Image (spheres, rainbow, N blue to C red):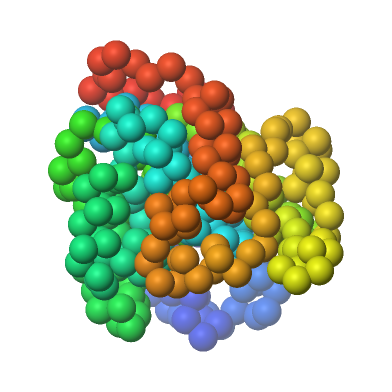
Length: 325
């Protein structure tokens, strides 16, 4: 053990050994001791980091019965990510009735799926959406609608693990995961614990939203999750009376970002009253108005997503690891 490790600083006094005399330290001596301590701590942290990295990244384990996982994400809240996730899940089932689809809401702090699918409202509609189109799970089923979830990171991670592993999904072709906004713990936890077939990034054409969408796409690339493409939400508003089109949030911003990232735009979704009303009343537009132009936009996006998915494994391995960085 070096001398700095036997040195204790207490109000400018050096204490060496058990009963030896104490001598006051001047400011310069204290600075030297601090530098020695900091340097040693830095070296210890480096060694610890090396040990952790040598273990490799967390082992990924597929969700039992689930063939492919599609995550829907955004860098910023308020861009219509959850609306897109709900309608994408329904559109995947509507495009191919032979496919079983699930919807997992991992936005622990602000779950939206229960309200958007009316699973706490009209029982008849709930049963139809739930049984005919897709299965769903959300933290919102476990807490009151107005009750805040005031949890620290470890509790959130525990909840995510339970939502992933302790839900009986049955046999699913697709599990659509509605991620929380941002690039934090939940995104990393999901990305590193289960194999993900692809990510869909949702953004409005606005520059502020696109900045965060860019970060979201880069995050998935860093954890080796394929980004399937971008959805340009609220792309244009058309006046219902005069039919004039206005690009409230800007025009084609997502397309410019897609070119920068060498990605595709999976589709455009207009800013339309019907989409908002359908979501607020728990009647997703793909379910309640399947022949509308707005629903058809989601159906086209779902078709583009399927085109870009890799072929699912016939027998998923029990576990696999992420590629090395």
